[in-house]
Length: 114
Image (cartoon, rainbow, N blue to C red):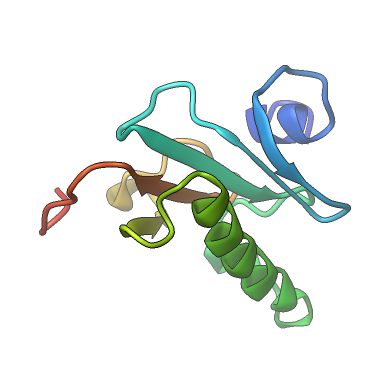
């Protein structure tokens, strides 16, 4: 989608600080970090939210989650602890309607998260 900022980042039409990339996903630093480590992991294919992922594409979810674990290790937060957040829909706080996972760490997290 041409008007989707994450699609533009995935297609390299918009710059980002990439920390991981393969043929299916891209992970990059958040421009408005909420923790010392704040990485966004996205599929390169556009899906507006978790609700839009078809059953036939369910493997992308496990792929992203396992890469989030790897990214947390690479960022030095894997053993100390990190949080993975997936917002779905406006009421959850989703602002960009391209499914994305937040990898947050580098400080003590609180609960409930807002």
